[in-house]
Image (cartoon, rainbow, N blue to C red; front, side, top):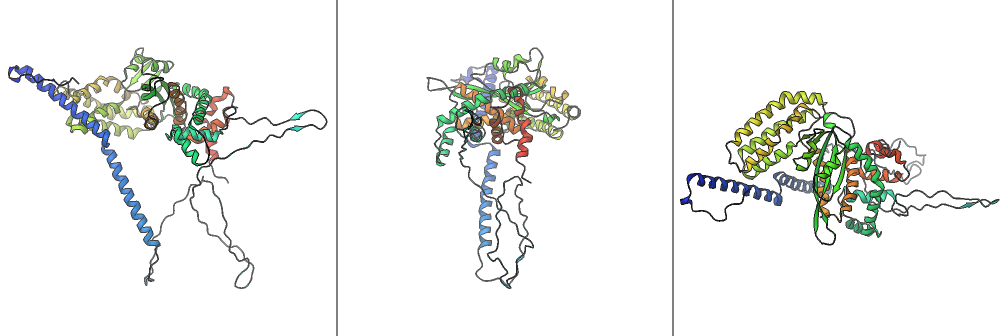
Amino acid sequence: MDDAPAILPDLDKLDPAALKALVVGLHGYIEHLRLVIAKLRRTQFGRKSEKVARQIEQLELQLEGLEAIRTAQVQRPEKEPSTKTARPNPTKRRTLPAHLRREVYTHLPEEEDCPECGGILRKFGEDISEMLEYIPASFLVIRHVRPKLSCALCACVLQAPAPTRPMDRGMAGPGLLAHVLTAKFSDHLPLYRQSQIYAREGVDLDRSTLARWVGEASHLLEPLVEVLRRYVIKTDKLHGDDTPLPVLAPGTGRTKTGRFWTYVRDSRPAGDKMPPAVWFTYSPDRKGEHPQRHLADFRGILQADAYSGFNKLYEDGLIQEAPCMAHIRRKFYDLMEAHQSPIATEAVERIAALYQIEREIRGHPPYQRREVRTARARPLLNSMHDWLEASLSRLPRKSETAAAIHYALARWNALVRYLDDGRIELDNTAAERALRAVVVGRKNYLFAGSDSGGVRAAVFYSLIGSAKLNGLDPEAYLRHVLTRIADHPITRIEELLPWNVAPSLSAANQPAA
């Protein structure tokens, strides 16, 4: 948006055309400022949905207080016995999860014989009640003892081989390593905070020690991530996105901007049964050469935003562009929130109708999705295209609403590609969801210590993100992998991918018979 004129010209000396151009320019600038102010207000105070969430939290707190008061009144003994027999309201008790470990305590009467006649007591039934308890996580020292045995007749000495450790001569077991990594890259708990927590348990693990463990674990898991990368790229439809990461620049005391790139293979909305997976990678900048290198072996459909660095990928036709409707909607939504623009409001409503169709066909095979889209979505998109062009002709050329319409129309030919291909999604939310872990972690870490730190983080984001996509507890998955990977044959490393170990983890979580 062009800046407003610093000095207002003499309006009496302007001809009608120049005066009209000045008014149009000032109107566009005012609209731009209103939009910026509205965005800043939402950043400061939160979107309406966030305000609703806070109202719900307040109501939940009020409900907790009322429940506590009611419970206290029920449990408080009455001063005088009531003459009426109160019938308690039947309450349905919540069943506790069957997979939880159970400790059974049997409580027998103190009397061994009948207190009335001295007869022998026999069991004829029992009452069972369960209480959910929590035992804080604790450290455990596992001592491996390997006796040395010698032959009484010769000089032969025998001793069992030392158990394999995730890290040579490292004192961290696989469970502790998995916990540290999950806390940092899934729960977004920085290492210095973890160090403080462990100190309360009486265990001195300084931040530098934890950082060294993270580095060694990253090196150990790199071959597995390489196999994961090849799996993600070997598909005909891929979601791609990136997000900035402040990185400390050595020797300057300042930060530069690195990038996390994510590529997601997930065609479950189109009825595909192949396991979903996500691959993260890091680069020190946002040059287009990075995605071109990442996707050098990819052939198919790339769902991504309008980043110009992707454009070269589409030139030879081996990779087809599928843009993101969510990005188009977001521009109109911001205008609608800023000053209730009728055009923006109608655009958001038209896009909502397209999303309703997608919700109905989610999980259906591609040919069914194509048929439904052809019958129902194509007329809506054709109508929307004509309406956008007609609306554009009535708007000032430099207005924010015109800019949003230009953004949509510039990508229209690629956008409507999803109508004829049931594999394509309407938006790129699969990649945006994957990046949320980075965004939330970025708020806690503020910046990465180095480019190598970004590379290491990409390893764990890849494995943790893929574990979550396949319904696995990321800590349990990492514990499983770290326990086995040092001894696992490199030629069968794919056996440690999340979907391949899922049956083993599910079996381990089953309650004992």
